[in-house]
Length: 307
Image (cartoon, rainbow, N blue to C red; front, side):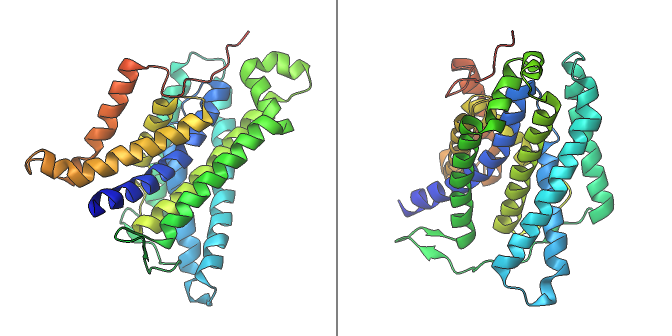
């Protein structure tokens, strides 16, 4: 039972990181029906920018908590500018093109960002410095680190903040209006281009935070680190219901739990034939089952029918 509860904790932490990235996917898709496949690379850029700031200031004597806050601010700024530029230069000119065109562009942008990161930061993996206390918190058998507690708390706070933003603020109303019909929204005083850019900026901020949490939790960064989390986060968004904020979080948490429990018990279930490194099988099997039995996702798709 101790192993079971430990894997539950690991799954919640992993799922929370997936959820942070999935929120960016689902926000963009909910407004312009675009899957931004470069979103995982934004996570990677955030982690590498944070690593650059932290290593540059490692000898300054600044406390780890404050150094992490500085690196988070720098990563969010860079990622927000990057995603804003991607939307304006790569996606906006294709907004009225056939849907395959922006999809291919997104894949190309993903490869471009990976290549640029490999050139700037070199291809070798880099250790991410320990900024937070490493002493684990004992929960009566299972343990959890301070970093993992921070990840769980951030996910809860960010989801609550996004729900408030979308449902209670002027920007949220503009987002919902743009998703419904951008031309009519423009006649009512909404600026669709500004709203879409703001959505990309918010998604970039979430990806940057997720990238730093990923690096802090696993202790390493490299140019290709964003591909698999980005793919898993997209899976989580589809699993929960694309366009649904709560669905993205539920999908991410469930995906993390399935993956963690699979990694913990896969060897025993298969008699040692498959090890924990095959845990990705469970994530995509779960996606296939959900798409077969409930194509709209667990909590249902929330994409406006454009008039």
